[in-house]
Image (cartoon, rainbow, N blue to C red; front, top):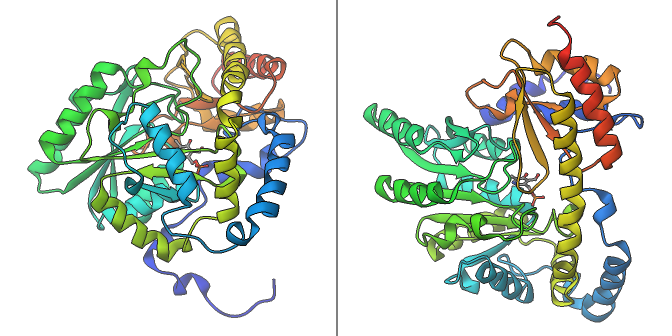
Length: 407
Ligand SMILES: Cc1ncc(COP(=O)(O)O)c(C=O)c1O
C-alpha cells in the first residue's frame, strides 16, 4: 500500500484501538492449507447444505415474491418468518412468546451485538462461562463491559461460583448486569447445563435482578432420544431472559438468518438499535428461510443432521478414548459441534499448535475462550467439518504429539 503519512491508529476511537484479531481469525491462514485436517473450524459441514432444494426455493422466491424479497423490509423481520419462529419457540417450550416479542437478526452474532449495545454501559459487569464463545465475548467487550468468568464443569455453569462472584462484585459497588450462557452443547466446551441448574440459574437471576442472555444456536442438534434436558431457560422464566437462536447450523450460515425473543420493552429497544445497524436483515435470505420452514425442508432434514454430526462426534470420542495421553480429559457432548480437551496441567495447547499443524492437524487453543486467561492446557476440537475417518486420523496424530515430553 502507498505510504500516506497518516497515523491511522491515532484516528481510531478507544474501542477501535482495543479491537484486535482473535485467536481463531489468526489461525485462518494456517488452516486454509488444503492438506490440513481441521478440527479448528467450527462451521457446519458444507455437505449438509441442501443445495438442490435451496436453489429451487431461491429461484421460486425471486420469481414469485421478488418485489418484496428484493426490497428493504421491516426492521423487526419478515412477517411470515416471524410467525414461523413464534411456532418454533412454542415447540421449544416457550409457549408465551408472541410474534411481537421476536426480532429477526443478521445471524445470532448481530443479536449478541445489539443486546450488548442496549444493555451495557462501560464498566458494567457481564458474567460469562469459563470458557465461553469468542463471538459473544467480542460483542460484550465491544459494549465496553467488563467480563468476569464463572466456573463451569460437566453440568454447566457452577451456581455456587456464580452467587459468590455476584456477591463479591456487588460488595465493591460494581454493577452486575447480566449472565451470558450457552446452555446446550456449548461452544467451545460441548457441555450442556443440567436441568436442576437451569432452575437455579433463573432463580439467582431473579434474586439479583440480572438479565440472562441465552444463546442457543445448537438446540436442534442433539444426539439423544429426547430433548427434555435441553428446555430453554426462556421457558422457565419470562421476564428476564433474552433468548437467541439461529438457522445457521440447521440450514446454512450464509443466509445470516437468526432471531432473538425477549420481553416487549427489550425488543422495542433492540429494534431501534438494529435500525442503526442494518435497517433490516436481508429480505431475500429471510424469504428463503421462511420457505424452507414452510415447505418442511428444515424439519425433514433434522434427523439426518443429528445422525450426521453424532457419527462424527462418536468418531472423535472413540479416538480420544483410544489415544489420549494419561492425565488428559475431555467433555462428552450430547449434541452440537465441539469437544473441549484438557491436557495435563503443565502442557500448553498454544505452544503445541505449530507441531500439530506441521503434522497436518489444526485445533483452536482454549485460552482465548477463558476471560480469566486460564485454560492454557485446553483446546477446542470441532467434529463438524471433517469426515469420521479424518477425525480418527487427526485425533491419533494429535494425541501422538500430546503424549510427547513437554518441549
Ligand atoms: C454459541 C454461538 N453463538 C452464536 C453464533 C453465531 O451464529 P450465527 O451464524 O447465527 O451468527 C455461533 C456460531 O458459531 C455460536 O457458536
